[in-house]
Image 1 (cartoon, one colour):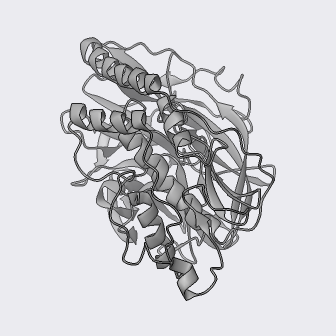
Image 2 (spheres, helix red, strand yellow):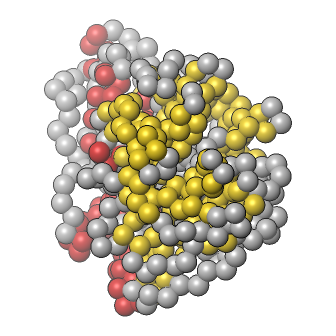
Length: 474
């Protein structure tokens, strides 16, 4: 059976469920064109290691009568689309229970919409991200890891809205050929044209309200740091301290390929000084989430490369930081963002496993104290949505509501921002509504962080470069 189905069984067993397998029909072969494409891709790109679509020996007893041997099952999960009756829990991709649906979406250059369906009703939904649309194997891995998350969460989910399945898609050999040719062309052209990207940070006087106008939010111009061909800067946070405005950001020198946290000080007229490194570790750092609490200035930089979430205290702001605590260990957490809400600390971050994307799965943790102990939300990941999951800055309070800025990663990493109103946040559930989607201007192809202080608001943006040239406009 496919590796992802075995992982689903292991996940459910780890959650305390008694899992039994039952094979009701011979395993259906993968579509010929799709299987051929996977083989050709592995050959051309010299891919090694396991993938979630490959077939492996099932767990002991998987071919036995399964649940029937131990009595009736409380729930049947149909992983083949062949179980008679409507009561089984099914995975549906783009409205179809057929396995080909995922492949068709990936060949079309997009992540499929996933739904866990039972009795004609949606229990949970997901919109996975594709980090490299030119590669089908890692794209399929990312979708299948989120399918495991979705089904595992749906086992205990209440019924949702109605669902009308669409007709199953067909996967033609020509589609696979076109995908492979396009993938190779993209690889060759990328080398010939030396395509690259550079991130930079900008700032402007703070505007009124929240950035909820997709058409007008870029009309007030930003000032930008001078472009440096040897590095990029991104993930800005801004703090007013003792009469100074300080921007903390990720700085990544291309020579090392490892991010550090740097500070840029603005003078009274808003003119920047040069970036200076204020925190460096033997692993990559980014997204310096900075905040005040208890008369101190704190920072939680992203340290997912170390599989930790680390809390630092400013011994001398902004130049000296001391590690106060490791809040979470052995977790690949992206862009951790905290907020004290009604006496409880909440931490928002993206999480991923060995095969999934770091762009699309929002997880929550809570604690009675900033230093912990931090407990994972029982519904993690509480949201699988490439368009509005990954944090993009500190939470905003406006008109009595709580808002979060998220990354829209449907088209690419950091393609734009989503302004989301938090509708529910408690120990049993989470809900949000997207109020606005904010696309970059300034000739940029993306932006993925927005923050503000009492005086300024800051943003980052990414530009495509070719042969070492880039042009930025306010």
